[in-house]
Image 1 (tube, rainbow, N blue to C red):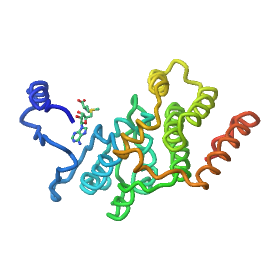
Image 2: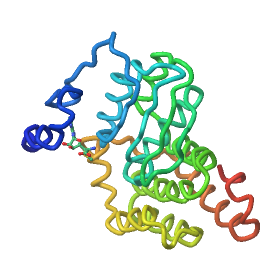
Image 3: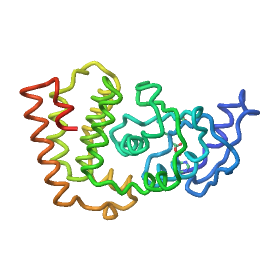
Length: 246
Ligand SMILES: C[S@@+](CC[C@H](N)C(=O)[O-])C[C@H]1O[C@@H](n2cnc3c(N)ncnc32)[C@H](O)[C@@H]1O
C-alpha cells in the first residue's frame, strides 16, 4: 500500500461527514464489531484472495438475512474471477437482485450462512474444475451480457492456472462466440486481456506466484475436455453449448 489518502477522502465527502466513520489502515488488520449489522456492503477492495477472504469472514457474518445487500463492484472484472466462484459457492444463501451495472452485480442475503461455509469460501481451496464449473453456473444465472463478461473471467482463470498460451486460445474462442462488440464492459475487459500475464495475477492473488497450487492432471484433463466440448457444441449446436459444457 502507498500513502494514506484519508485527507482526500474526507475532503470529498465533507457533505456526508456526520454519516461516515473512517477506519483507516490495512483491512486485513481490522475487526468489524460483532454486534453491528451491515445492511449494505459495497465491496471494492477484494483485490486479492486474502482481502476477499477477509471480507467473507469479517463482513458477511454481519449481513441480515432477508434484508442486507452486497454489491460486488468487480464482479465481472476478469482479474477478479474468484468473486463469481465464491458467490456461486454461496448461492444457497443469496439471490441476485441486479445482474449488471457496469462491472457490478448486486446480491441479497436470503438465509444465514453457516460460519464453516464462509470459512471454506474464504480459504478458496477450489480445484480448477470446480472454479470453471462455478463460473459457468454463474454465466447461466446472470444471462447476457454478464455471461459473456464472465467468459473473459473464465479465460483469466484458465490463464492463471495454465499460463499465457492457454489463455490466448481461450480468449480467441471467447471473442469468436461473443455478440458484444460495442459493449463498454466487454471492450474494457478485452483491453485488460490484451496485457494478460499469468505471473502478475498469481502474485496479485496469492502474494507469491509459487504459493498458487499447480494444476493437477485432473485439472489438465478437465481443461482439455471442456475446451473440446465447447468448441464442438458451439459449432454444431450454438443454442445448447452452455448446458453441455457447464
Ligand atoms: C478500486 S479502489 C476502491 C475505490 C473506491 N470504491 C472509490 O470509489 O474511491 C480499491 C481500494 O482498496 C484499497 N486497498 C487495497 N488493499 C487494501 C488493504 N489491505 N487495506 C485497506 N485498503 C486496501 C486501495 O488503497 C484502493 O483505495
